[in-house]
Image (cartoon, rainbow, N blue to C red; front, side, top):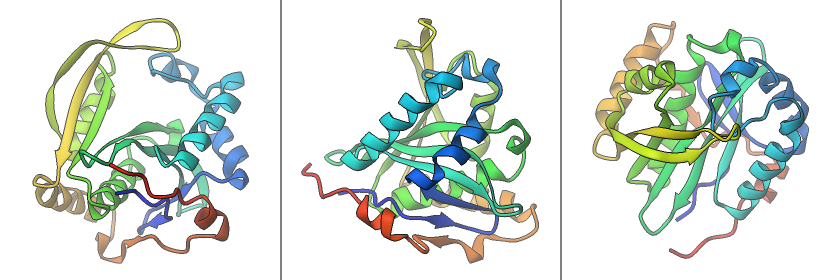
Length: 221
């Protein structure tokens, strides 16, 4: 199996797979809030952006990750990133992560609208388990993941070494294909409070020639 790097769009956001044309807009969205980057596993802050971007594109081309720029449709601005990561075709498992939003895009519709699209795309692609992980010290992130309806499974102790050298504990959440109908309904109810249901959701809309060229070749399981 594979997860195609398609454009994903609903009423509020359009998720666009990384292309060279998006690089500077993504840089502008991420080069803020150094304190928030300090507790993340990796960083795209300042001088770290170019190697971060190059690594994301390399993994996209290899078919391992699908990194997205998040465009807020209200004003057409790129306000952050989120990705489907570390695809394991044999086990039909993927991680939803590498999420960072500009401070002015936090706490509103952008995150749930983006997660709605990414989860739908993952399960439509044949995934049976989506993992969402976060740092044990990041209470805000844990609350946001729980609000999506993901199940908190436990803590992976001393799981990662962050870019600052800190050894972190990781909190593991997941959404399975069996969970998805209930989680989807919960997300749709939440999104409806922002003014319109997700009935107009479009998955895989308007892929560009560049995006088609970047579609990875099939991988064996």
